[in-house]
Amino acid sequence: MMPLQPILNDSSSIEEPEPFPEGLKCNVPLREFDSVYDVVPGLRKDMPMREKMEILLKFYQQEIVAAIEQADSSDKTFITDEWSRGEGLGGGITRVFQDGRVFEKGGVNFSAIYGSLPPAAVQRMKANHKDIQIPDNAKLPFYACGLSLVIHPQHYLAPSVHMNYRYFETRNEDGTPQAWWFGGGQDLSPMYYNEADAVHFHKLLKDVCDHHDPTYYQRFKKWADEYFLIKYRGEARGIGGIFFDDLNEKEAEEHFLFVADALSRFLPSYLPAVRRAYEPSDEPRPTLEEGKYWQGLRRGRYVEFNLAVDRGTSFGLQTPGSRVESILMTLPKNASWEYNYHPNPGSLEAKTVEVLKNPKNYV
Image (cartoon, rainbow, N blue to C red):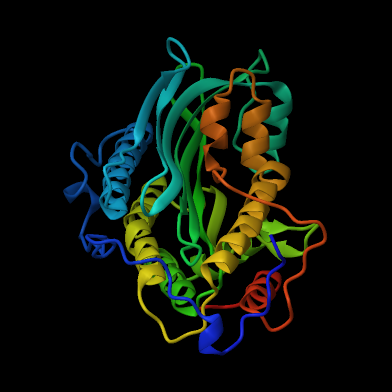
């Protein structure tokens, strides 16, 4: 395929995007509620945090899966793969979607596992968690649960998205919690930078952060900008969002409510960007050939980050008995690389790279 040519502000270089799928439903209203306990069935305040997080994450896994299937406007559905690590070791539910009308590939994975941390891992964790007590046998029981999601749309103007929220606790020998913390976040990876998508995505994240702590958004946005940087490229995977880890500075219930609110904002923050990709626009747009070619190159960067940079992917692949297919479901179905490729100055592709190299404030 020939290298991309500059996108000119001329009607001859602008091709209308693919037809808008009839019945595409991407308008998800922002759910307002006084308490997550009134929304999620079976959730109670007096439950242990492990149980509360599992119920919450399974609820949003199902809600997100249903919304993606509806938005795809096809007969495609998620494949469900329930798995177990063995008696007393936990398991999970992997949900994978592929070759839809609107979405090329996606996965929404839930896991809740029990195990024992080896001495080296315990020592690394003690650097951030002074309250961890090392047992006599030097192996520390732990529990971890999480909901992890990646969606890659078909349209080159629609961004990919990643979300992950998790809870981790070390446990005493009698099974009671010892040290605990929350982690997670969500980030957007556009093929072509769209200011409206960026502002909308970040505004909803800022709103939920500000509701719980006015320092959260700037702290967690900065963390995301740093974490999702491909250092050897000098550019970010996308336009960021929020990212946090080892969060235990408040009462556990306060952090739980923050995570619950953030989860409720995911669909309203993302699906409008998918719909916008199909809507007519007066702005310059790439041709179909240019757009798909550039999408392949940007997806290549996504693969690079996940395999060469992301700590979670590396940890998972190096863990004995890990579910490789579940870990690698984050990768797009199609990606490409071109030797020493540089977009033409002034092109839409070059403008996107400029944003990825220079993180900005969107709200």
